[in-house]
Length: 275
Length: 250
Image 1 (spheres, chains in turn yellow, green):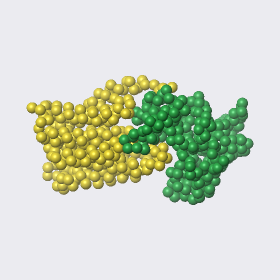
Image 2 (cartoon, chains in turn yellow, brown):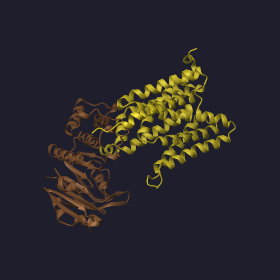
Image 3 (cartoon, chains in turn blue, yellow):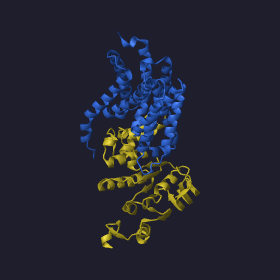
C-alpha cells in the first residue's frame, strides 16, 4: 500500500511540509544570529502556553496563550543586559528550565497528564486535520513574504547591522519583525507537531545546509530540498516500520546533521586562510 | 572649502547620560581626520553622532545636505559565520534595497569596479570567512565604496592586521581619498596613523574633544596630558613616531 494515498497521511504531510519549510528558513537566521539556544527556550515557553491552553480545554485558544508566553519570553530576553556580569545564556537556560518545568508540573495535575505530555512534546502528526494545514499555510505565506521577499536585507542585518543602520534602515524594527515571525511560527508549529519536531525543523535543516554548502546562494535551493526530501522519507519509513512519525523525522534530521558534522570536521579544521 | 560636518557645542550620549560635552569641530571636504583617544573616551559615540544615529542632547550638528556616508565597522563586529563570497558581501547593500534582492547590471558592474579599486577582483568568488584579515578589511571597504560615498568613516580598520597589511591598507585609503575625492574619518589607537597620514586630528578625552593637527600634536604636550604618561617623540625619514615611554625608562 502506498502510504501517501491515505488521506490522514496526505494531511499530515502537507502540514509538515508547509510548517517545516517555514521553520527551516527561519532557522537559517536563528543559526547565523547564533541564538539557537534562545530558540530552544522559546520552544519550551510555547509548549508551556500550549499546556496551559490544553488544561483549560481550549483547542485554538492555546495558540494565543502560547504566543503570549513566547512574547513575554522574548521581551524578557531583550530586557536583560549583556553586561549583567554573567553569560546571557544563563538567562536563556533559566527560561528553558522554567518553561519545561512548569509545563510538566501543570500536566502532572491534569486528568490526562501523560497523554497530553506526549502530545505537546512529541506531537501526533497522523491525527492532524485540515485546520492544521491552513495554520501551516498561514505561516508559510508569512515566511515567504517576510523572509524570502527581503532575504538579502535579513542577511545584511545579520552580517553587519551598523552599516544597515547607516543606510537608514530601521534595524530594531526589522529585528522586531523577525522575532514576531519566529514567535508566531514556533507557536503554530508546536500546536501542529509538538516541541521536538518543531525544534528539529527550526535548526537541523539549516544546520545541515551550513555544514554541507559552501556558497550562500546554494542554500536557497538546498535547505527546502533537504527539508522536503527528509520529510517524505521520514513519513514513508515511519509508516513502513510502524514507528511514530514525529520522533522518527526528528531523529532522521539529527542523525543526518551528525553524519555531516563528522564528514565536514577534518576538512574545515585544516582550511587555512587565504593570503 | 565648505564644512561637510560641523559640531557646535554638541553634547552626545545615551538616554540622559552624556558621553561627550561641548564638542566643537569641523570637517571639511577632502580632510582626512584621525580620531584618537583612550578607550571609552567617546570616539564611537562621536561617529554615531556624525552618522545621524544619535541625536544631540544639546547643541547642533550641521551636515552638508549632499553628503553620502559609508561606514567601515570594526572587523569583529561582522558575522563571518555566513558563507558569503567577497562579491556577495559587496552586493548586499544594493540587493537589500529591492524585493527578492534583484540587482541591475550597472550595480553588478559597480561592485566589480569597487573590488578592482581595492585590489580584490581576483578573490571575488572566495568565501569571505576564508580570506585573510587584510582581504576581509578590503572587501568591507569595497562594500562601503559601492555606496558611492563622499565621506568614509572607518572604525579601527587596521586592528588585528599585521604590519605589512596595515601599511598596504593605509596606502589604499590615501589613494582612494585622492582618486575618489573622499573625506576620511579614521578611528584608531595607533598614533602613528594620524600623525603621518591625516591632516587633522580629533583627540578625545573624558568627554571633551580637541581639534588639532599632526604637527601641533608633536610640538605640544597634549598627548602627555590626555594619556597622563610621558611620550617619546621621534622623527625618522620624515615619519613621525610617538610611543608612551616604557616604565623602566622613566
